[in-house]
Image (cartoon, rainbow, N blue to C red; front, side, top):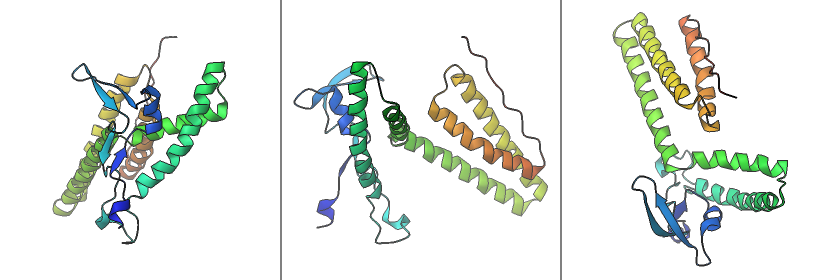
Length: 211
């Protein structure tokens, strides 16, 4: 009985948002940027995947916890998102959007970026690379010397700074809020690691933009 109550089709984009592009039959055209082709689509079958947000039962600390907690949480948030979205659209038609609604909308946009398949793949990749770096660090520390471990950590930090520099170079004109959030989370961690190594943290670089 419990399995029948589970939500199978879980949307990575709220259906209330997709309906803004659909006709009265809940249909619209979906454009594939990779293949430059538009195909018929529907609200129910777009931006969704089976059990996408389900948690692996073996990872739950309490066996009685609900594996679909994330999906159910998003369902509650989407009810509020629909209210905010309708208010913003109504305000835009009159030429005045309430500051409170704009603030809520910004939060939902950030949440939307985090809940997609692309964001999940990025997080998994970053987590895998970080774990591998820590494994390599521990291996050097136990099999060689503390000096070698510090050298490995220094190289890890240098690679991270180089990656940040490339990201800043690509986004220096108009960095997204998501990019700034990722970079702001990285810097305090690296600052602490530099301090442990007795190194001076590099000064951040700033880019001028045309006015």
